[in-house]
Length: 88
Image 1: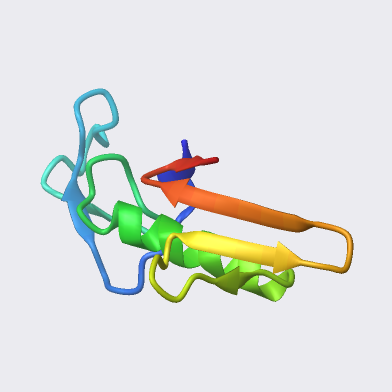
Image 2: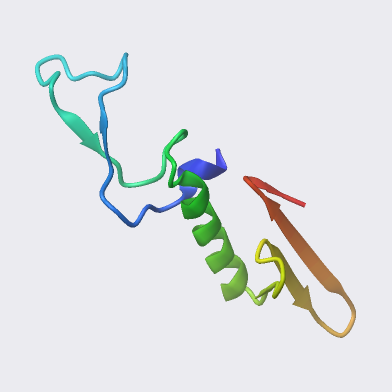
């Protein structure tokens, strides 16, 4: 479900999927406001939203590995590793 929370930057239109077709406007398409499963931009959109959230909350992005986020204080280090739509 992570990919459904990414915001896409460009305009993307998709055909009406089976079961969600408008009864009288069958030739119309849908304009997406958010990422959708199977959309090639979905992983990038999710990573952008998640990395923005982490950085705004005090994490620093790894220099060599941009999917690693680090937050430190005098008592502890918190590491968040992103892999596709999972966090470790």
